[in-house]
Length: 84
Image 1 (cartoon, rainbow, N blue to C red):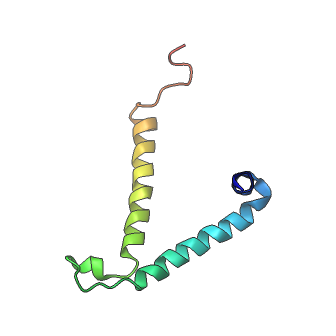
Image 2 (image 1 turned 45 degrees about the vertical axis):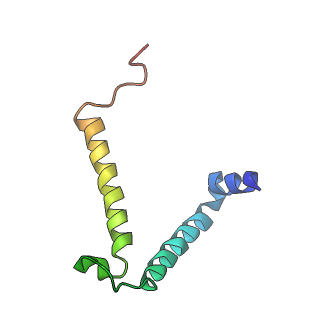
């Protein structure tokens, strides 16, 4: 079972199916967010459907860009043979 899952996510010929599965999961998460009751929210933006998904995605993208900047531009990343 696990071998089939690993082969599915590792094989290049399944790239189109993986992309469709990814988009399907994203749509299902946003649809599920519309079903959550929002009577007891503390902030205005917490009442917006899809806010958590957008905020989480934006945070991940920002984290990736900041880490790339710190690694490449700020000099935190070293060569592979740095300790050799």
